[in-house]
Image (cartoon, rainbow, N blue to C red; front, side, top):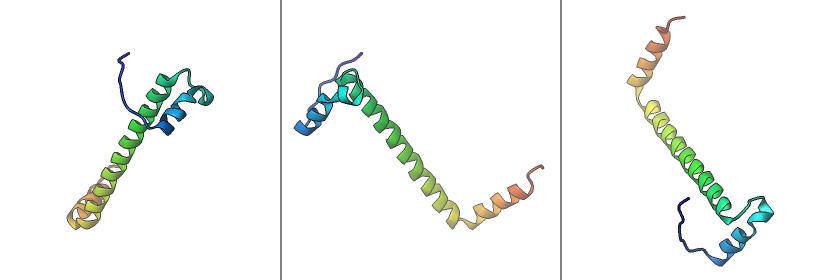
Length: 77
């Protein structure tokens, strides 16, 4: 694995030092899991924001709504 050097505040280091209390084998595992969770969370938030923007655009675009409705009505059953 690749190693990285970074700075932490004391309370963050205290939390990291308690890694075994939280079920991690070491500090590195705890950091890797935390980063994976942060990445997943950020991707989820970006997807939610994108969906919100698309919904706003759709709500304001009457022509797009009509086109969608026509497509739905002509959808094979």
